[in-house]
Amino acid sequence: MNTAHNIRTASRRAFTLIELVAVMVVLAILAGVAIPKYFDYADRAKTASCEGTLGGVRTGLASFLSDSAISGTAAYPTAVQLGTLGTVMQQAIPENPYNGISAVATITSGAAATARTVANTDTYGWNYYVDNAADPPVAVFWANSTTETTKTDTAGDPIPANEL
Image (spheres, one colour):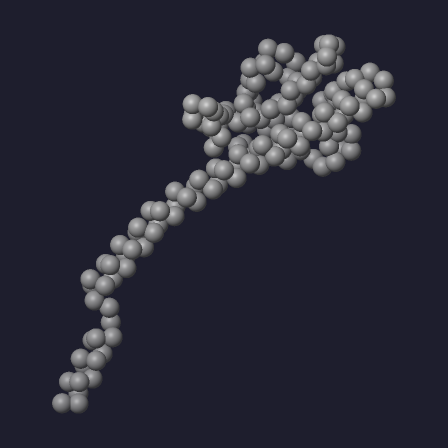
């Protein structure tokens, strides 16, 4: 009788199939809720990183313009000056979070700058257009990517990175 009691106790220590299925269902539900949230966080982080870089560079451009206006003629930095550390930016321009490239393309067409044209996304992460001959001088810095961001327009549609 003592042997039978030990066999029953040993078999009762294991989980039943129903208990295992119940745990798997609960884990599947949690994963179904958590995974989409994770991807949303990653997308929002990319958008925030892109906006942060754009804001920092645009602030540097405005500061350069103000300094040059005080010392003589108002002008935005050339592409070479933009890329030279300590002239406009104190640190290198970060990678574009949408294509992982930090190189800046020099755009020479005002129409391309107005349309925020995207080209050579495998080579450049950012685009920069400057026209110091215009009155007033013009400079446009934008992301070289049309990937949709988590930012939305007034209609609720996602804004592409090149329009931030």
